[in-house]
Image (cartoon, rainbow, N blue to C red; front, top):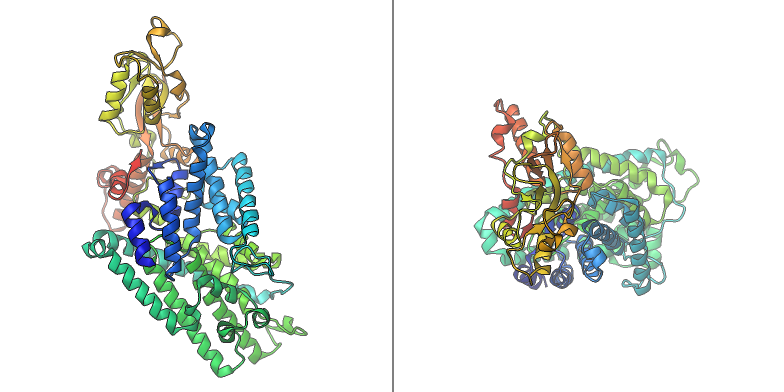
Length: 608
């Protein structure tokens, strides 16, 4: 299964490999990755995901489901010209698709909306929130109707969803909950660092490129050997999570199998043996997830991260439960007086799962809500928050980027993370590109437009009054130029073009009217604007470029998103040089800063 999935995806559509969340995040940020959301991608990703999940590798389907949902959203957009021709509306549909995908993956509609807001979308107006909420509701209703896991008795939307009823936690348990959060932050930071090095190794080593199918075979064999050597690794991840999240009393009543016997044994000697097996399962799953994530198959990391955290949390809860048996109802267990069950290892499993996933992805609010919807217990919001917040703090101490932002950086996606900041005193004039290809308001012809587009690969072009008077009057994208050329293909290519009908020299009928394709209000900044303000504009508006103009409106230069990223990388290199005792200006690092576009074009096609 794994080999077939790898061959199909790598041969027919390499864009389907991996999770797809990083690419989706870049698309929501305003860039167009060709064929990333096409019907072919949808078909191959769906087939490849089914095969890779069926293979039993340490990967999840939740992340790829988000990519698949956005592919469906892209197909939906093509049916309605109103959305197809409006980039802002497109992003709104994609944001709603993300919410639907998370809902289908976790059965958590509110968490899906918050995930789209917190982790994916750079622009999220109230109308988009309403659309996302409606899509999440529809996804939850259809998931309930089709009931793919056969949970008629429990009413759960996904296999590992559980419902806690009235079990409380004690005040002192906040300490082990916080400890799980710190442990999750450390585990997530280590996961990101090792995955980054492994990603560079895979891309920079000939052996991995020539033997990618052999790598899949080795991963499958190792996963199979580990699964048959440990009772906690033998079952599927969803089935294991269902056991880890459930109390022993419920497991013995409804799921009395070998896994239940291992988790809920009363034999003291066997209990310590099962705890060692649980620890071995957590460590092996952690290592397998690191090596599998980024391999040549469609793969997500939500489910493996939840399993690693849940096994670790269940182990810690087991230890505290044994400690309670030894100490009795003395300090700090005075709250257990008169209660049959006091310490619930299953609750620690839920908290640990949230902690490890939070350390890996740096999610906070949306993650807590998703876990809350998975358990159905409002009483556990505080334990989840106590674990998720330290998880993010500890993870951020080793690097501000979560795993998806790190993948964006490694693959060269031109994307500005909302968490990015500048620490220099640079201005817009120091970042801009002075070489700008322009169109004049009335001096162009259809032939000159076609020639300019064929000679340059820019996403769009500014429109000025004349070559002498460079006052900016608009902006036109390459896509709009292509539409205009197709619309006027039946007239002579020497026909002059009018980007505006105001004060047009001569008769309007003598011109090809392109005014409807022009953006008359491009974003313009002054040369003296601080670079951090420019960065805020990119983050807040999700635009690809802005223009630097003098006080009279004349065009001086352009700042593209990749120019901003190059400057930020040069600034990081400058700070690192200071730490090493070298003293060089930021500008000296600008040429050394890698080209994000060139790096990304090595593996795929990007329209800028």
